[in-house]
Image (cartoon, rainbow, N blue to C red):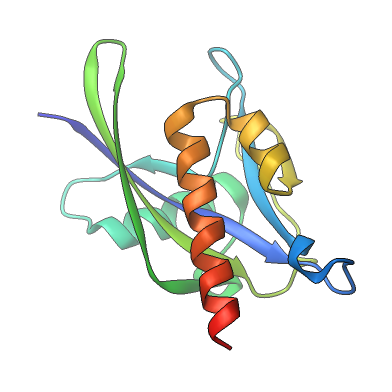
Length: 149
């Protein structure tokens, strides 16, 4: 059976960016273990916990961001499948906007640093193709929603 984890791709919109389409930054956390990879907040599902509750709990634990700090974006849910130490793992990511772009990130001891990054910088930090593809897909989703307004 695959390990299951859930989390959020958290983003914020900056005011007064030129061009305006460059106003989106994604939150990545750098692990304090292993190869110190960069990842959105996520974690394992506890017994009896539903997936969205896990994503909210882990985002609070790892980045200090509460449910009231976030606005979940409709129509985006991405499931990744990969192996960790020879074991299958699946991760569900929702997309959530930080309501107040100035809200402070507070890291747990699982992470040593965080960064807000525009799409291409976030993809460079993320390193893994599946995560890069997920970030790009999230970005396209946001652009499609913005174009409909």
